[in-house]
Length: 113
Length: 113
Image 1 (cartoon, chains in turn cyan, orange):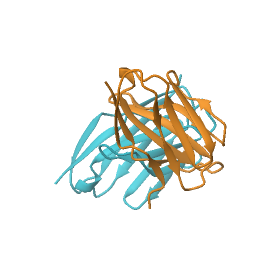
Image 2: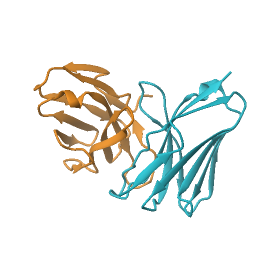
Image 3: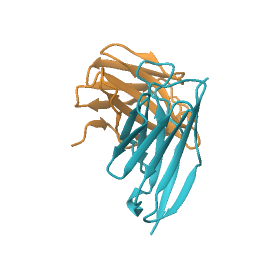
Image 4: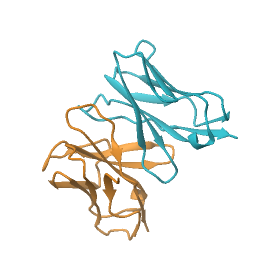
């Protein structure tokens, strides 16, 4: 069955550094993968979508890569700021539904001033 | 600018009560979803709908039902609330044809006592 692992539950980095979050999936090949940000007590907010034929996608300080051979996506935040502190969720397309996402449990990022 | 609205932010119900959670979106999206989110388990899909009057079971449908009488409204029903249904409930919508990101509501924190 499909499985997602996000590299760690929590990640602390210094302001100004690049944060790198990892998402590994097993047992299937999603056509695309999305990343979301979630703040405490709020719903997730969509950030980026990357398709299986795309190696990399950028949006402002965010960069996502998608390696279908390694079955892995990396999510980078450059020049991180304390306001970037949140939980980040990886969500590949589910293998069970035409348009369903399968969410990872997330990585809680803390950017230290 | 609110696009997905969940009727209640916090809700406290008694065991055995019938509970209705309402969700309305104003983006004319075909797809609507109900998730629950619990610590350590991430977001789990309860039910989803690709069209009016259409519904499909997600990963954990037991103890729940849904209704979609109009395109913009998707209701989650707990037929007989139990304490193990205490959770954060999140509604989301997405466009039908494009692989767009989900738009989530702010969530309903339900406590069953």
